[in-house]
Amino acid sequence: MIPQQRRNESISERQVAADLKRLKRQVAKTEAEQRRLRNTIRGLARETDVSLGCSCPHCEQAYMLVRDGLMYCPSCSNRLSV
Ligand SMILES: [Zn+2]
Image: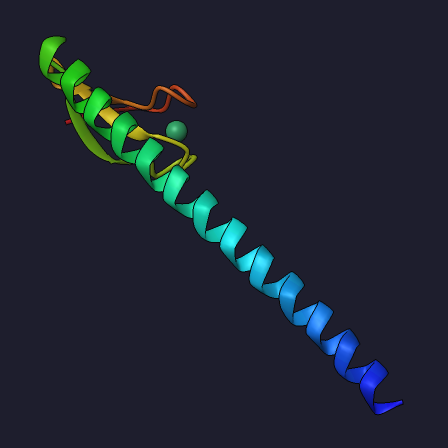
């Protein structure tokens, strides 16, 4: 029975190693996409005279956009005066 157990452990370990490799690739891909989006948003903000504020205190699904003394959330439309 011991060789059978070892084989099962080995399959399980190989599966974990494969999952880990896949997850690492996914994280790297997600991080690269996040960097691209962050740079694009910064560029858009510069070109449209908008500043990026803090994370929306109401929904936390977007950063607040600041323009003309008004801060607003593009996700939930929460508005605050600056
Ligand atoms: Zn919001």
